[in-house]
Length: 153
Image 1 (cartoon, rainbow, N blue to C red):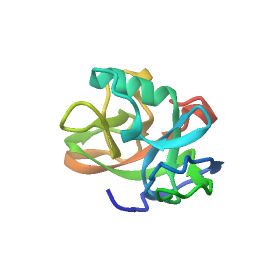
Image 2 (image 1 turned 180 degrees about the vertical axis):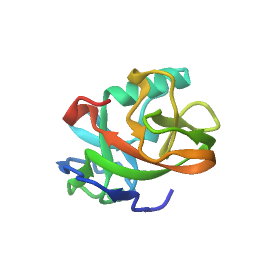
Image 3 (image 1 turned 135 degrees about the vertical axis):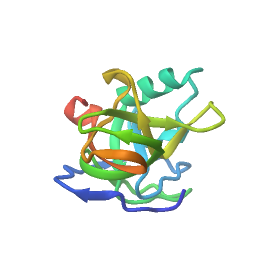
Image 4 (image 1 turned 45 degrees about the vertical axis):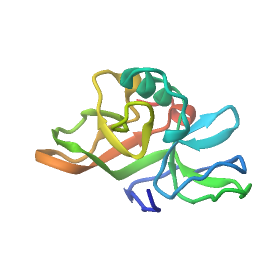
């Protein structure tokens, strides 16, 4: 996916996160903390199930990338740990407060970097819906909460 500023409103409470030189992160990527470095969702090792992938990601959720990094770059990047962001999602209806997590890619072995989906349990969630979508929507406003920095949902 290409850079896409997804922030819409609210305090972002940014942190500056280290990035490995081999890691590529786009603006708008959902990122997790891997030991001491930020990585995009698709970099997470497959856990065998969508629920397993979402739960592990939620446990290590750092936030949304507000800067990009290319292969070979070692400069740290700014990551929003809170705020309301607009993300792509599978066509569905959404109610205020619905739990959402990272969506799994169609292949079933990786997570999407910039797409969310409804989840059944708080341990899979990285955000709550911040704008109702009573008709099937393909993007939705969500209020993110970094697990690493704020304790999550």
